[in-house]
Amino acid sequence: MTQLLSSSPSWAITVVRVTLGVIFFAHGAQKVLGWFGGHGLKGTVGYLTSTGLSLPIAYVVCFFEFFAGLGLIAGLLTRPSALAIIIVMVGAIAKVHGPNGFFLNWELTPRNGHGIEVHLAYIAMAVACLLAGAGALALDGILLG
Image 1 (tube, rainbow, N blue to C red):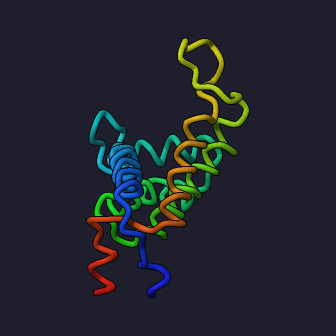
Image 2: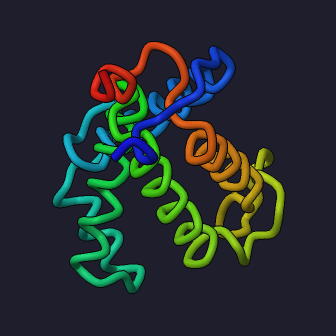
């Protein structure tokens, strides 16, 4: 349990963790709760299954984003939360964004969507949390006592 919850007291990783957590909580809240203009769980799962994902995987994507975001914001189970984000982002690259190349589609040209650059940035942030732990101001540190 110590390996899972141990952490560097670094403020730098804290900034990365909280920022990544806010991003994924917001996206997860769109998917699960319908907040921030999202379609909610039913709409999101319906869309994800229409792309070929199985029903269980569609639910996993929604809840991984939501709960991993919360976990990272609080610094609670930081490493499993970071791993969940890595899994979702690798899946997003493989299933949706990989064929669109590297760059974001700023011009909103007719291609299908954005490339993989932002997903790689999220993966890098999550890997940093996976390696360093939660940083400062984290519940993981409190749980270790």
